[in-house]
Image (cartoon, rainbow, N blue to C red; front, side, top):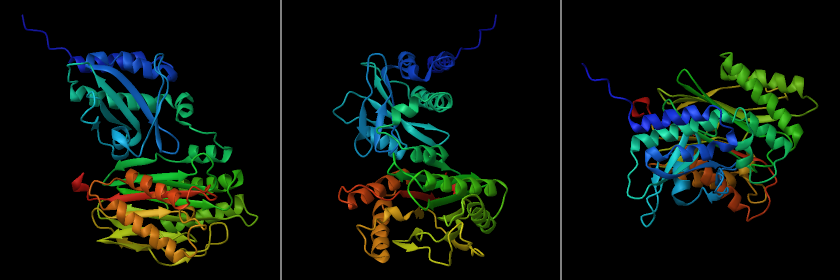
Amino acid sequence: MPEPPPGPPPAAEALVDLLRAAQSCPAERLAGLVDEHARPLGAARITIWLADQGQRHLVSLPTEDQPSLTVPVAVGPAGRAYRTGRDQPTEPSGDGTLWLALTASTERLGVLEVRPVEGMVPPPDGLAGLALVVAQLVLSKSLHSDAFYRARRQADMTLAAEMQWMMLPPLVSELGGVGVAGVLEPAYEVGGDAFDHALNDGVLHLAVFDAVGHDVQAAMISHVALSTYRHARRDGRDLAATAVAIDAAVSAHVGDGNFVTGVLAQIDCHTGTTRWLDVAHPTPLITRGAGVEPLAGPVCRPFGLDIGRPQVQELSLGAGEWLLLYTDGVLDERVWRDQDGAQAWLAQRLLHHTRPERATPADLVHHLMLDTIAGMGGARQRDDAALLAARWHRRDQD
């Protein structure tokens, strides 16, 4: 008689068992369930850590025998795994703990802490599979429960901020020859700033918006602008036609002299060709060789105040070069008395943080926002601040 075909390896069986058990598991019990099903993978303890709303801390999901804890994103192997998207071992003097990047469809959610059974080396493929499964479970269960949203909150959130965060795309993404990351501050009080990105047919679409005001009204105005941007983009309209549509929507549905500034941009992921238009907004920056250049050009009137005929600009990004979009809150008026000095400071910080070859968009926006906050000397941020960074590399380098 022929021998029966071999069964699945133990790691695969453990992951299938986890998926089956997770189907009916409430979100608040997921951390304990994952920990229970990790033993066949050589793990004595599994802890799920999610990034908090401001991306400054990682927050562990509690289990029956372990309360929720926080660690900073800025230092240590856990924060490094989250910022870089690369798995990290614990410090050399540690207990062999591994920190795995928790990523779902390139959306960076947090990290997975794996403490191995004493004397065992967990199979790398099994752990990689576990991280993928856990990330997908977190993402899918977030659609049906507030448990993870509550865990990630480290402060009370305003209604305006709630509206903005529910509208945003994934904060970090690596797809199709480009990496992109965004951040908003103050995370729990943001009102009128927003950003968006999407990859369609090899073209990365980027936008930042800054609506007048800092409250629910500003969030509503921003919603109109961003929703119109997405509607026009999904209709296949070009940048100029999209800008005209946003202008008309803000004027028709908001009116009363309210307005939005912004930048719309596109990066061709095959060639690096970059097109953009500036609507009464702070000038975008790009890294170029060993320096930084502003994307100077014609500037339209704000959305909602008759932008006229938008003029789209174009240039070519080189492999590894960066594009930075931002709102005026990054250059706080209490720190900088003139626009030139403010932009020179931002250009210097951009160059500093992109010099490391392995720098990631998530690293860049994280450090730039910390620089912005540090520059205020601990003063409370009066204006919203948004950063959206993209780095292009040739598709054959993926």
